[in-house]
Length: 504
Image (cartoon, rainbow, N blue to C red; front, top):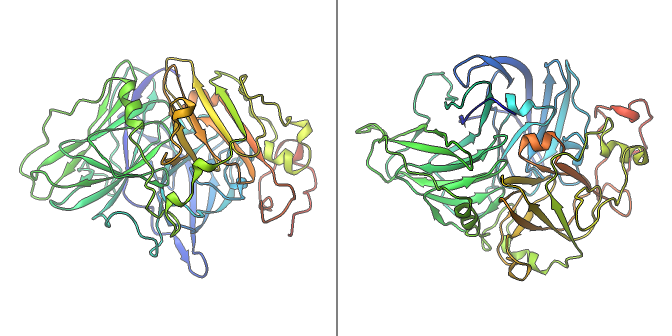
């Protein structure tokens, strides 16, 4: 993927108008989204982008634990389109995970309605397209899940809550840098406003396709409070590495001399570092931001050591009243250890999504179960029980791996005897450093077809991904929902009669 890369800093301040909210039981949020092509100019030169409701980026989704989200998506592109909700677990409902191994894409000039519940989750997430290379052209936004009022949050309410979507942007030409100001009136104004003495929450997601970022707030420290749906121990940082596909939440206190400051986003592990610098403004500021920017770290070893400082907050409640630490993941009976090594080209998207082939009982015409061994080659279609998965990276570039449908415990990069079996953070995306490895621990208890994939988009596009089929012993609604009646069909099942749905 050649051409010019820029590091846009994409700010989403609010959703595109309030959703329709229906009370009674767990509330429903209703949205209608129109997906279109339009001219955008993130590098100053017009190019074709993908917009949702004429916005780039966003709209944001602002939800609360257990909300039911209904989004009617109209595809006005001239090619199939599919959105996924990165980090949303879709309990018993991989039909809404929307990757090409579980769902047929939305055909051009048609619509499809997503229906999913943000069950037992809190935190900061994002959504983006998974078809073709659409993510490169936009179509992404933020998704936040607030805690319910009865659940104590381990910090005071911030004075304001911002979402930052930061990422690289590829086009033709030489390396350049710019930023997108996503404000309602389109004026070139400061992105953030902070009042002296108050504390602000920033949800920072790397929505890029290839490049890890380092985030700093000029003259201010960050207090890390949440990472991909988990409350963390509230350590202070002057800079944070955020890898592709990851989201962090930090608190920043406005405790400096009233003037302008920069949020500094810098590329990591690239031959040429580029930096974006949107402005923070104090009311009644006394001066412009200093041009002297804080330098970013220079090595991946620094990032590895920072990773080791992240700890799960064992006493905080997340989506439920019981503390996070009441789940003793260190007592999981490890039944299998699986080693996956990067492969430049492996998985090829089938004409019939794997989940549909499985549901229609024609899996034998599309794929085979149990075709993985514990050591490479690393191609997987079915895992059951409680494994450790080890991602090995024998290359000189950093990798970023995501598991849909689950959160896992990032217990290493350490020797087996030194695994963190007490307070590793539960998350959904893990970086793997060059010539290194990372181990994750989880229990496969969410029935469905789930994607393990590279978040480095050229690797993902070329097939660095695989699927896990988690099956129950009996087909039951207690374990997995039926296929939605309006699901698009494609491939060999398109003209087949639908299987009898489960009703127990």
